Length: 90
Image: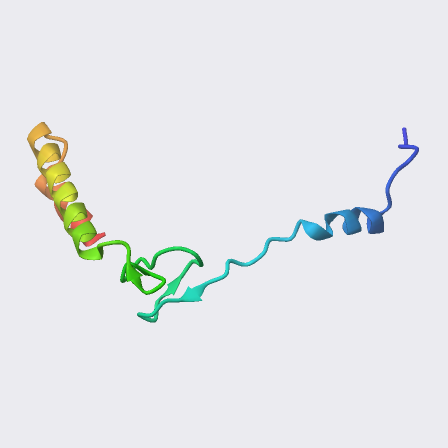
């Protein structure tokens, strides 16, 4: 059977003309890195000239977490020396 009130191609295309994806916009931070607008910079932690995120403390915290996870995996026997070497290479 044929649909009685079938839309033609041009009407379908006109309806879908607003479905296109827009590119993400980027702003330039004071440090020169690209960042999302209205967000703090991931590299320096500044927003609108003020330091909002302490980047050094964040990296130290992440290093502590990864070290703690590795020691827990070693103690449980899930992480062996051969696996550690493969992870460091990757």
